[in-house]
Length: 214
Picture 1: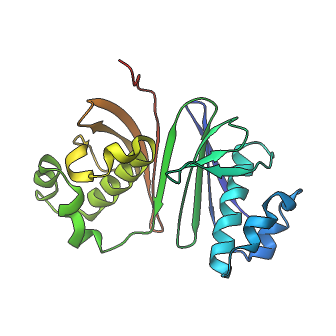
Picture 2: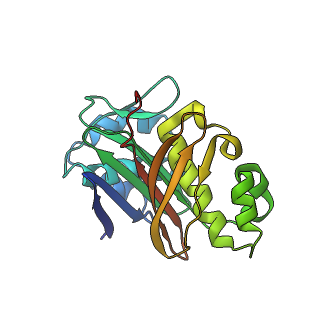
């Protein structure tokens, strides 16, 4: 039995589950597993097969049971072959996360809590975020900022590759679940990013509701 957390948010669907099953167990959850057989045959390790199938199983739940082929852009961004939904994936040790939206670009990130953030924060915090962090050096602040920027990057792409200079998260109150505002500094576009903190993972997702041409 696989326990899924499925959430609806502003016409998007988010599916998260703990991927503690074998690739064979996951494969048995598909009606038409043949659509993935060629790609699956190219994967050599059990972990890669679990990630591959886990992401597609979460996608199936977001798409209300439909099993669809996934392609990738030249820059490696996942897309549905039939372009019926915008999609974004993320995975970390033991966890899978997928978001879909019928029309708007989306980004999602899931991370295991990592002490590496305590040594790398100067690489992804802008000056104002750094000042905020140094007030009490709260580890959860780093977790939220990092995942929020990762989710934004999946929407903006190469124009947000420098997290410290190109992305800023406005001051926020740290909670187990909440929203933050992110700014893409070069364009001035603002994004609402939702986050969740648990002992096992940090989760952030974003739906692009900005007008790129304004």
